[in-house]
Amino acid sequence: MEAVRQSAAKARPTPRPRSQNPLRKLWKFRALIILALPGLVLLLINNYLPMFGVFLAFKDFNYAKGIIGSKWNGFDNFHFLFATSDMWHVIAHTIVYNLAFLIINTVLSVLLALLLNEVKNRFLSKFYQSTMLLPHFISMVVVAYLVYGFLNPELGFINKSILEPAGKEGISWYMSPQYWPYILTLVNIWKSVGFGSVIYLATIVGIDREYYEAAMLDGASKWKQMTKITLPFLTPVIIILTLLAIGRIFSADFGLFYQVTMNAGMLKSTTDVIDTYVYNALLVTGDTNLASAAGLMQAVVGFILIVSVNMIVKRVSSDKALF
Amino acid sequence: MRGNNWTNVLINIGLILLSLVCIIPFWLVLMVSISGQNALAKYGYSFWPKEFDLVAYKFLIHDAEPIIRSFGVSIAVTVIGTVASLAITSALAFSLSRQDFPYRGALSLFVLVTMLFGGGLLPWYLVYTKLLHLQDTMMVLIIPGLIGGFNVFIMRTFFTTSIPPSLIDSAQIDGASEYRTYFNIILPLSLPVLATIGLFVIVNYWNDWFTSLVFIKTDTLYNLQYFLYNTLMNAQYLQSVADKAHIDVSTMQTQPLEELRMAMAIIAVVPVALVFPFLQKYFVKGLTIGAVKG
Image 1 (cartoon, each protein chain N blue to C red):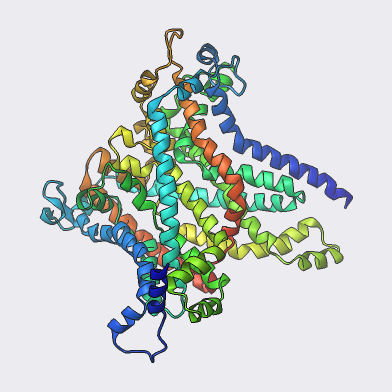
Image 2: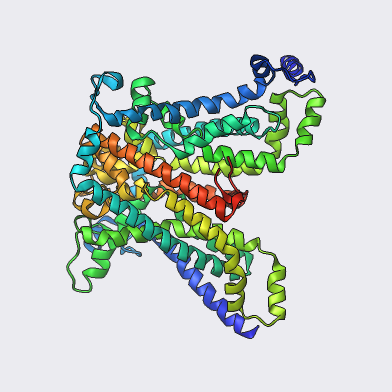
């Protein structure tokens, strides 16, 4: 304890006039720097060191030769990446899935928030929110189990309890790519709509009650109140969340596309997205050149998207901008 | 007002149905896990099994060693990771929240950049394997989840908006060091935001399978999620786990693999389902803490 007090006395900012010497300044704020240091070092290791690896995308990478020893090969990796139609499909999948998720989730989340707001019983309201948030807190591995419970070709609920009793042939779900855009969209809705609705509900709850009281005095119906008061208040939040989602449109939810499809090769024609492509290129087929080129392209496009979206958000409502 | 009663009933019915949709997949898996083997083979998975049998859970309790070990790995990583993460994140956020800290702008930018640009999977993998040589250790399961720019900024926003600078000033005039200010004033006043971020971090560690997928090869270091992943993707792995359980299998024709698989999914969900209702209010509060600004 005595030691703590002594260092306390030393670390107290001295009231001396501000010194111009940068080392002095560092020393003066050493306590705050020391507090910040562990976090900064971790970010350096986990985020900044990998950034220096981006030039791997311009090398013919070889594990034995290492990052420095591997030969440069200019834009060859990108050339190969876009030479086949694979990459274009994968990019198209990523964007189309994300757009579909964005539109459906936003509409359903807002609707659900409006409904939840009508529930006046606090116990019921909390119950609904808890059950609908639960999927958000479950890992994708468990989600894959839940989906497998329905789709298991030999024993699954859909084949055994719905299709076969109806006299239809069971479907080999994990070998039939045509169904997966719908399955993945459903799973995504199931997992994220509850979360989205709670965000919108938080906004609705924050609206001043006086608007509604005034509207009721004027004889406005519930519907009128919803469309003329609640929705206009929600619009800025909807716009901002939509813009942020567009900023992330180039990166897919790896867990959803990898775990829920059980990484089945047969499903790739409709379910391969940039993130699964990079993962498979890197750790399954070992094609590090393609993986690093695709990864860099994704990071750069993502960066441009986020920065431009942030500029737009700043125009719309400057206090909601990310930076 | 009379018309509203009707609408209220309809709304509640709709919401009850939606709640059911959210829960029903869990129910299906729970029912499979307590199904009798023969009925399961004959009728498949159903919402109400024809016969009940707890054999899968007996398997799990009866030293099915790999499962218990993976549970242990998950708990250890989650506990150590969450405590360390809260300490590191809040300390950094405290420094960045101080108006009189001359480097706060530059360091905030340093944090912000990590949220905008990433080096990608391969360089990240190489940093942990070739540079730090942490593959196949428990450290690699903990370190990547310790800090995230988003959490730092949420905490910083909380500190700047909820803790008056005059409080810090007066403490330091009374002779408190920065460390004491942080420990004795900031942390006790920040329990709501610590609970919110804590919930994010707990869920993040508990649900993490990706780090194991990339870095872990030794099966004694499998965490629960990665263990589940393996038993779902790889039937032989599930078989080998069942073989290691020392239960008396002589009375059974075959091992209850399907039930066992689903029982494991259930025990992975239970901790989350138990913890989350208590932290839910902090979670909602955290969502409304406000704009995250750099």
